[in-house]
Length: 169
Ligand SMILES: [Cu+2]
Image (cartoon, rainbow, N blue to C red; front, side, top):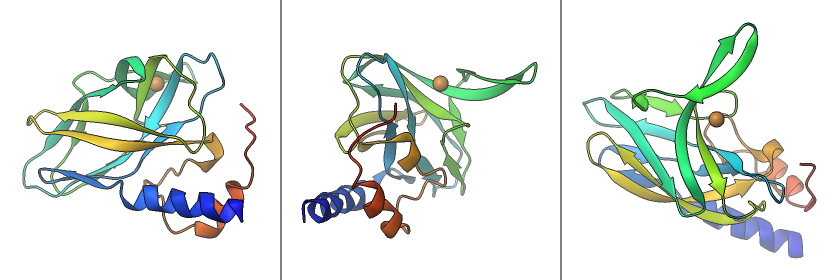
C-alpha cells in the first residue's frame, strides 16, 4: 500500500511540472541522485520552442548548488569528456532540445545537500530573450532517468522501480 501511495504522489508531481515561459515549454526536470558527500550532479530536461524565433538557454541557478554550468560532451582522443558549452544551449524555433545523460546537460556544482531519490527541488532557467522560469525538479536514481525527455508512458516500469528504496551509488 505504501508503494502505491508513493507512486501516486510521484505522478502528481510529474503532471504539475510542465512549465511555460513565453513560447517555451519546459518538461520535467530530472536530477541525478547523489551519494552523501558528492559535490556535483547532472540535470536533464526537454525544452520545446513553440515560437517563431530561436531561443537560447543561457543560465541555470538553484538554491542547492553554488554554481551551475551548461555542459556538452566531446570526444577527446577517444574518450568522452564534458565541458562547459560556450554561449549556452540553442533552442531553435519549432524544435525540441533534449538535455540527457551522455549529451547536453546541466551541471550542478558545490552541492550543499544530498540528492535523495523521490525528493523535489526547484531550479531557475534563464533564456537569452529574458524569459525566466522556475520549475520543479525531481531527484531520480540514474537508472530511472529517461533520456527521451518524456517521463510518462512507462508507468509499470516506474512503479516497479519505486519499490526499491536503496541506491547503488
Ligand atoms: Cu557536466
